[in-house]
Figure 1 (cartoon, rainbow, N blue to C red):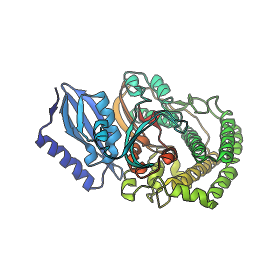
Figure 2 (cartoon, one colour; figure 1 turned 180 degrees about the vertical axis):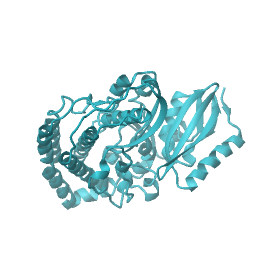
Figure 3 (cartoon, rainbow, N blue to C red; figure 1 turned 60 degrees about the vertical axis):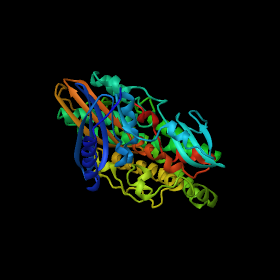
Figure 4 (cartoon, rainbow, N blue to C red; figure 1 turned 120 degrees about the vertical axis):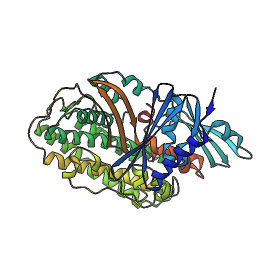
Length: 457
């Protein structure tokens, strides 16, 4: 039987969250766990690298205020909790309420599978003519229960699962997990291994961005550019074949470094192949930037207000003028490399697509720099895994900020929570699609880099 949390407790919780909001804190993660007869919620907040948390012990089957009243970016994280724990939030965003608002508008259902959708998601639109007036989105079609499967597992087994969590960001998730393991155990990763990890991480970013560009060319109907991007993907696969049989770069990471050395000569050959992409990417970008029909079509859709983009991560934020540099949070040696974060000042489909090109070129530049100054030495440092502890790791992924919480006890994962960029950005999907034409939905979604596999754990 459902019962509501007391009004006093609700006011206290929301007062704390509003207090942090007023101090310009952002919501990083919402964790949930059973504690006796309660569900303990932990709201983890961040400002300028300082981490704070707000805890709340919720009786089972209680209803509490929605965090979206303060931090709208928490909608998807909150939805995950309601699917796993007996607690509800006072959120009006339900399918029943949506359909009750139909009035004179036409209800259009779209998905969950569509040729121009990269991953399944179900949409219900209230439309007037072909213009979207209200959006309801339903995810969960990729849910795999990876976090639950990882709990109780040994580190190598968990790493193997996490690298498979997403076809585009699996390497980054596995890397962040290992960095958590290494931090708990004070494992010092050799310099060469860190540089090689950086190179491999940027290669995973490059691969993800190439596939995003390929998908946008399909949505635009630019078959020649789609063919050109496909050739660049083939170049990437040719380069990765020099170091691994898996283009997703699985199976290379290990606690303390990487599990095999990569010869300098091999890296130079790999780099020669990758740098061939620079001209092709630059040429397509310039052509799009000079083609008025492409600019007009893409600039008028997928717009987002700066006030909303501020709460987002990745290209959605950077295209609105926010200089988000997640690489500076990383333990990888990005600080020794020279780079400038690509930005724009009006968040729409066109600016986000241009940033896809810029980010791909940035990854190629960072790979080139890292190979040039690659130090000598070992590629693995290991002190044993028997410690107990917990840690929160923030690292870049291809599409924005990745947050991974890990708790360990003598080599066993006792708790893990993953929040990728899509967990934040998907909360705002209705803002991007409202007032858009129905036929522009695939293009708007493809510009947002939504990694549903990494989001639905």
